[in-house]
Image (cartoon, one colour):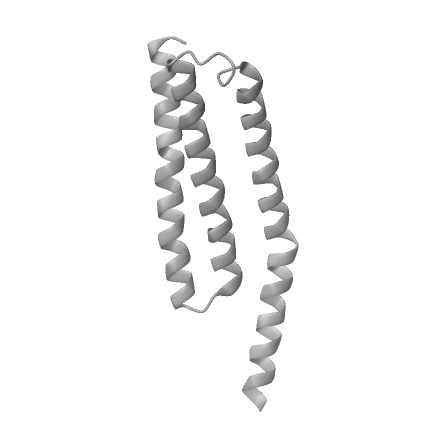
Amino acid sequence: MSENFAKFFYILFGFCLIFSLAARLIASQQEKKKDVPNKKLWQKLTVCFATLGIVGLFLLFFRQQRVYFLSMPLFWYLWLIGALVWLASILRWSMTKMKKMQKEIEERREKEKYL
């Protein structure tokens, strides 16, 4: 792996970890606001990007150390496919279940207004 290619991946995985920390801060703010659906979304993004960043750094470390079995290109493809599937599932959750949760909360608040 060339030096510039490795630097690109270090930066990419670093951004994943930084984004996971930012998402964790946003999730804690949503928890204070009692906004459960958004809190769950940001928690899911936190776990996703933290895991992708850490696993990516391990793959890059194994590639740099030339551990042949653990640095196979297959693992990089599996990492990419896993990332896409994970992000697609979070997106699907946000489009379906999150909107249902928000509607239920609004209906509950509307009913509590009159009680």
